[in-house]
Image (cartoon, rainbow, N blue to C red):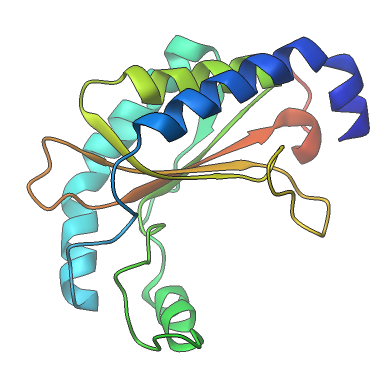
Length: 174
């Protein structure tokens, strides 16, 4: 991260500005409308094609790479997540990564992705977790998580976009 901070200082400032704008425009909290695992999976499977299409468009427009898993998060992983919760075991309302992707780029390109989420007419951001600048993981990992739903989705299924720096992933640009 020190190398990124040193070499991309101006881009980090741009990124911080875009994240601040996104945080100011978010609504509510990332809570699923589905109250059962079958409903959560049903809602996720319905929105996945739109999600994949829109994330690819954002990647193309921001000149970043995006990885969209071909499948939804496995049910076993969802169950693990909800059953180990201390505060509310079994509650699936806060599972927001059944439909997910990862954008990869330098800080300037990631700032463009943040801006694209903020300006997208059909995207409603409901959660932002900045582990690049605000709250880095103790392991040293840094990223940004954006939780959102599509306004046109009657189920308002919350999806997750993770933004990661190429150098954190060991990926060469170009």
